[in-house]
Length: 65
Image (cartoon, rainbow, N blue to C red; front, side, top):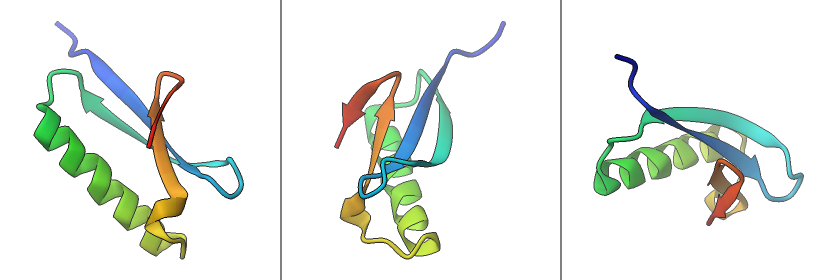
């Protein structure tokens, strides 16, 4: 049986460009999900030389800041 997955896009708010995708299992706990999303956001900020606040993520067309 296949696991259900949620797909997240990380977006640079200055340009509107997607800079990364992250896929996590749907059954991931809220706490673990928040940790993974914040960690990836910090990694992307360092890699792309951006302020963390300039990066946000969204899932299935719903913006989450």
